[in-house]
Length: 141
Image (tube, rainbow, N blue to C red; front, side, top):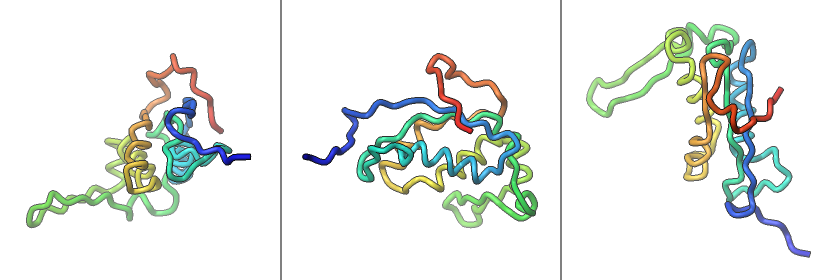
């Protein structure tokens, strides 16, 4: 008997939708990263991209526990001297909640070509409506 190895040819990708309303941002991101990576599947293969598509709705209604809204910052650097940019998560969640969710999910994916390819299958929306109704996504609790 041979061992089954998943690859791009024999994987059927499904669509999942996750509602982030009232749930912690990190817990929602963990579930999304797990589905994007394909770890929920019995045929998961670590060296192959066998993940699914994920739609996250109501990203603006996700909550940050504790004092993270005031104490947590999103930092990035332009590469030039004095080019450090800081945005407080209170501001980020008010202006671009999709970006906050994408940053959380991206940090939980592997930092290689499989993680980059998996990240392209993530779709985040600030409100309850999404454009992928034709794909008939499966609702995740």
